[in-house]
Image 1 (cartoon, helix red, strand yellow):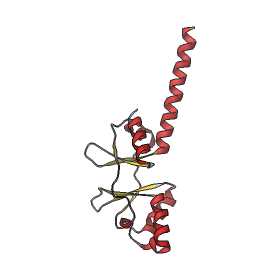
Image 2: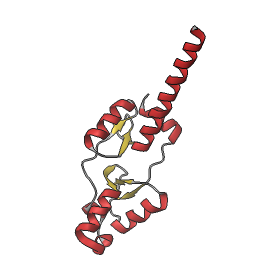
Image 3: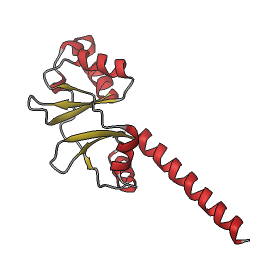
Image 4: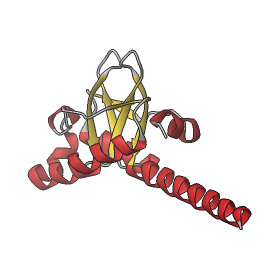
Length: 145
C-alpha cells in the first residue's frame, strides 16, 4: 500500500504554524488539536521545519518557562525527513524506525505539502492489511477443502 492510500482515508489536513510563532503558540495548537507534531511553514507556505512534543519537552528542560515566549525557529527541527505519496507503507515504516521519529510530512510531485503521516496511521494501516490477508487466506482455505 502507498502513502496516498493512507491519505485517502485519513485526509490531507495539515496542522501547522508559521515560523514566526512562539513556542507557547505552538504548544497551544498541539494541545488544541490533540496531535504530536506540527509542520512549520515559512511565509510562502513551504516546509521550514517540524516541531514535536519531544521538541517541546527539550525546550522547557533547557530554557524553563522563558522558552514559551521564544520563537519556534529556535526549537524546531530543520532537517525534516519527508515522504512522497508514492512511497510504500513498508518504506515509511523503515524510515520512521531508522530515524526514530513518529511524524512524516508528505510532499506531492511538486514538493508541496500534501499531508502528514503519523506512526499511528502506519500501524492502523498495517493492522488492516494483516486482517485482510488473514481473511483472504481463511476464505481460500475454506473453499479449497
